Image (cartoon, rainbow, N blue to C red; front, side, top):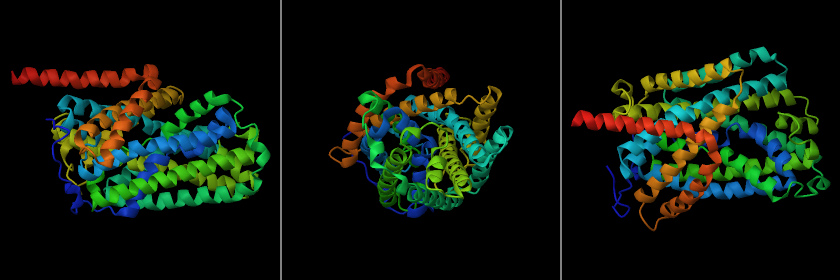
Length: 430
């Protein structure tokens, strides 16, 4: 099924929906999906890559995130759909494109679950001094706790996320306040030690940090008033996430100088620069909050998508239970748990090398963004801000696609699987 770009679309999302999420839990869920684990490592890595000019990288990516976030917000507000990008692709581009987008997210992006769990566990082990042998157990806890929370529904997970996000922002503000007095103007010179090439590399890093806007589309139907709440939650998240990364980057460069990026725990280095006795416990708490928060919101999105794909016949229909707004898709959540656990076990069995899983995650994400923004151009009414955002975002996401490199083999394989299903169905109908 497809619709023309000029077809009238009624924003039914302006009416109160069946969901129970309000504005504050919604903002918390959006913040968790966007801030992610980048807070733990990116300020230091970017400073090492681009020097003081890494500040420009943060500012540039914050601006680049506006059209992508704006287009997704417009889609989610006008078309609450648990299928997210897959649902929009079904409306605009047909069943095969929708199936491919759904498979990319459920079977490709889910590789990031193992990455988040292991990163959070390693960060805690480093700052608290726990033996490295305990890392897999800590990582498993980061998967189990949000999984149990989501068994009770997005409403419960949303309020849990609100508490986690509030704690995270408190930790970030504390670290900034403690480290700010150590900032020295001399550490901002030379401003471009690695040239503009270093700035470009840092921009690529922060692109992945600012990913996550598509997650809100899967739970858009869980909001009481998605037409009003989602644009506000998106705008607040843009401001808070951009301000957090920008402030952290300025303080990282100014307080640590050439030491920025030398270790794996930049937040701990910042806290220690201000002689904070409770630094290890504080930063360990931040790592735990980030890992739990990211897994919390992504599991909710994966489960809703899985139920939506099952309802459309792209997965066994047994998993469709709970697809409706306000319902809990426990069967699809179980499927999601199995998929993430497979990636987790594979990462553990291969020695904990996370790079292959990061590449699978990012390549799948870029593919989703491309098809999602093409669908947005067709679905959103011409002349609206959302439609203009989508046009700009199509250009930006297509430019990102080559950066995925060889890792594109995974989304290509999943696309081939989606096409194969279409061919088999066509033969059955014949």
